Image (tube, rainbow, N blue to C red; front, side, top):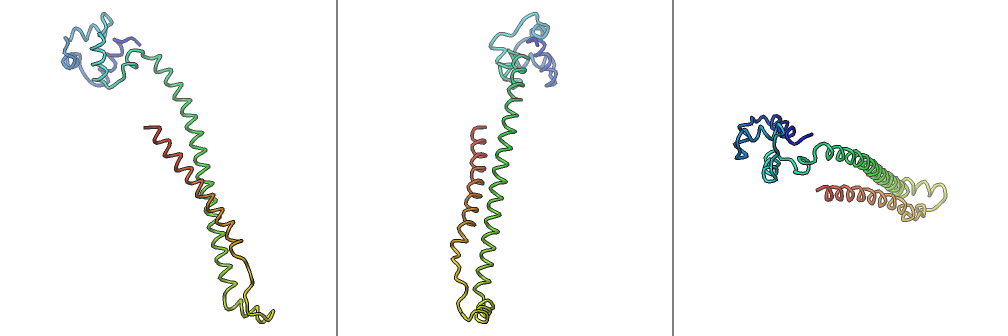
Length: 173
């Protein structure tokens, strides 16, 4: 797209007349008309002023469609990479939550097992069945360790997810 056509298009999108743009640019309406028809082009100072006024980059203003085509290709590639990264991060989060859930369920099961084995009913049952008052000698720490390991793995995976999100936000800004 030619510079004049671009000025015309942006001016109309913003809803300005040639006279209003000429006032803001401190040039005549005829100058704006010449820019838009392609009879002349704005000098560098006026081009920068136009870019500031319309809030576009000078690079986009000067290069035109070729720059936008390249940006679209890059954006599509970036979008695919972001989608893959999002999928990986989601899998990490779900895995972390799964490990935490399984660990907590295992810990709750062990707590229930401990409560059951140390209850009075179980001690009476053992006394009647075996003749001992002592409850079953179970090393509960050996049973708790896998549950704690599952919880730790889950917490680490969730922390990896949070760290990845934080790193993305930091790099995005």
